[in-house]
Amino acid sequence: MGSSCIRRKIPAREHQKESVLMREWHPILTAPLGRNLQLSVHENEEVHSLVFPCRQTERGWVDASKGTPVLVDPTHWREWAD
Image 1 (cartoon, rainbow, N blue to C red):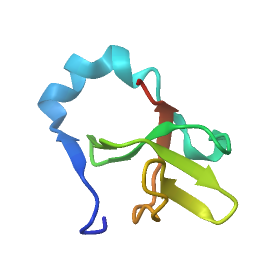
Image 2: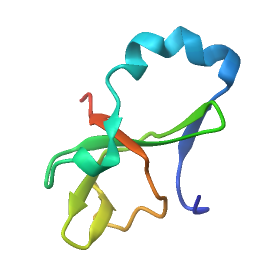
Image 3: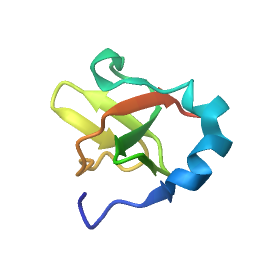
């Protein structure tokens, strides 16, 4: 992941505590354009969630607040909770 990203790492032992929240995650290929979303990368039984809203544009993922590119390859998305 890029060095400019802020993320939250959930260890596998805590992963089950968030099982209800995990049901809200959708595969990245189903992400809509132009909406504030939370992105994550799911790998090795860990979830790495970005802590800022992102938007998918025709050019790729951007930070919804700043308009700067998001330097990760997300695997999942869910609605951003304001």
